[in-house]
Image (cartoon, rainbow, N blue to C red; front, top):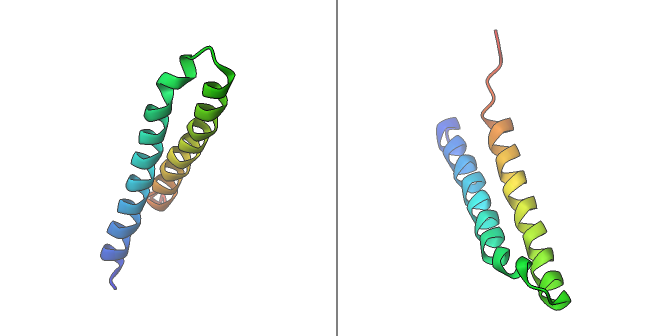
Length: 70
């Protein structure tokens, strides 16, 4: 595999991870407005998981694509 192909694969995986996290957060968001404790707990954990996925995807994208200053 060439470096360009590997770069595209890693960028694609990072973007897919970010989209999965975003979908998880958006799916759970309406349940966070509920007054029931079961809904809050049931939606809170996936929301936090989605935010972790989104954040790690963003960090991996930034770290992998950073350019060295010369």
